[in-house]
Image 1 (cartoon, rainbow, N blue to C red):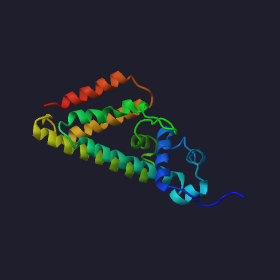
Image 2 (cartoon, rainbow, N blue to C red; image 1 turned 135 degrees about the vertical axis):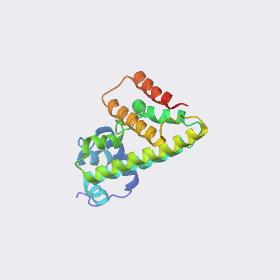
Image 3 (cartoon, one colour; image 1 turned 60 degrees about the vertical axis):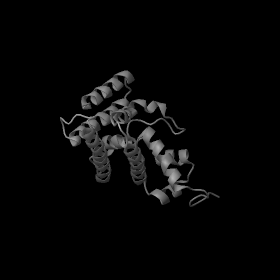
Amino acid sequence: MARTGRPRGFDKDQTLLCALELFWSRGYGATSIQDLVDALAVERGSLYGAFGDKRRFYLDAVRLYWEVYERHLTSALDTTPVLPALREILTHPARLDEISTELGTPQGCLVGNTTAELVPHDSEATEVVTRSYRRFTDIVAAALRRAQASGEVTDSARPEDQAQLLLYVVQGLSLVSRAGLDRAAALAAVDTAIDALRA
């Protein structure tokens, strides 16, 4: 007899984390519910019961991705000097091939991928990515404001505008990285952006 319901040992948080890795490596459209069932070793009914449909499951994974990223971003930028930490953040998309799990290798930024795949046709996805981008610029602008005050970063532009430019740099690099890139050229481009911020 086939089992029904949630299996013993079902860990919703761990299942969502594993789903995040699968969605991040394959994308929303290319990941089927059956792919999730097979990769996560969780019954279809349990997935639906815990997360709803695939779209809901995916958006929950994107929110988790951003929560983890935002904590890392905030922690990384709570330092002096700030420019080396910013460089590390901006070069991360060029180094994603160093990260591999049994569910695949991450591709680009999951928030950026969501923008390309679901926005603007999905209003909830649009809200998720808009908030994520806004939080990125708020956190980076706060760090740049402190760095301007200490004389590390040029005050020739508003921190908010500098942060917006860095958002475009990191998201552009994330998108291009999905098609393959010349790592040396990517790192040189990031260094150019960082150098432009120096006082």
